[in-house]
Image: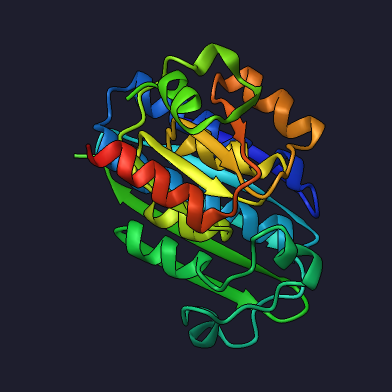
Length: 137
Length: 111
């Protein structure tokens, strides 16, 4: 199964809608609830990152019997230092985003904790691609 | 314990999501950082916070939380209340600050 969702830069009011739709699909597929929770946490954080940091992007979700692969591809400033971005507490979010309770530097660490595999490719001034894999069985 | 029992015992306001008043609350989580709640809150918890925007409901829904308790007299923004009605997750309120209401809820749930 394949799904695609557009993410609009700065559109916080719709952040989480792709995660919510993927959650429904996984429930229908009878994926166990612990695995669904991990996927939802990882995808939500990745979705919010695209809303908060990029100029916009797309989520590509591929679900097979064995695994779910989520690819979030954005155009935007990119991440100059990925290992620093992975550190808990490090954030480049704007003050407005922080006031909403985002930007605590926990997003990428949350993704890493919940994914079986996380790959980040980024080019400064071009964009970022985040690939999240979670085993379903 | 049901949300409506907690509303009564702690004298909370009900702003929205009335259909969810029969949800069960088993635990609580106190945080204003959304990723912290996303990473650590347990399903079935009441989330105590001062955040009043719609993203709170997105997280509550994804994490299957039972209710939100807004502290210090904060009120939900209109789109937060609307989302709460759609998801049947009640948004409740108190004039007390987080420390006090957390203590009261803790005592209530640990009885």
